[in-house]
Amino acid sequence: MTSLLTRWLLALTVATTTLVGLPSPAQAASYTPSSNPILFVYGWNSSASTWNTMISRFQADGWPSSHLRAFSYNTSQSNATTAQTVSQEVDNLLAATGATKVDIITHSMGGLSSRYYLKNLASSGKVDRWVSLGGPNHGTSSANTCVSTACAEMRVGSTFLATLNSGDETPGAFFYGTWRSPCDGVINPVDSTILSGASNTQTACVFHTSLQNDATIYGQVRNFVNP
Image (tube, rainbow, N blue to C red):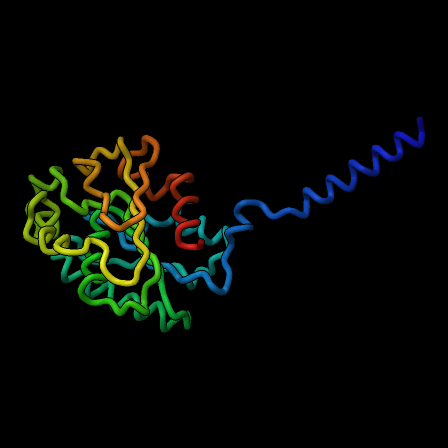
């Protein structure tokens, strides 16, 4: 009996040691030299602080703070104008980190200026992956009552969107990913976010302003930008 008990305890010790040595899901997806720095672009009438939760999660998974950049801009101006700022921010992030490519993660209207950048201004060598969380890629009825230039560009059938979506909706040597929620509440119709040629994901019931803070969506986005 003593011999049997000893063998059982030894087996339990080995099994426990083995389990302790296994990486957690977060560790398995942690930052590596091949992971790109990330530029975050918020949407209309928002601010860079909307990314605080997601940035802290990337940091917890090993991304250096120097590789995570959320910048401020005037959300009333044309998305084409903001695209020039996106271009500058990409170049600044590449110069600051010494990386060869960045990933871009966007929320809501932030997807439009960054898409304009990818289609009209970006070198294919500067960006790897692009993410849209609840982006009005084909317009939203929520923009029908606002008057700023950027907001009017989000209306269904706007000249800006017609031009942006003409031809290939996902041009260039970039990987595109979109996330949409059936409970978005701001992007109407919800399927507006879908882009032909992108990896399009429908989430659980998450409100528009919570897409960038949802833990499940974060995990999916993290795995998309760090495959």
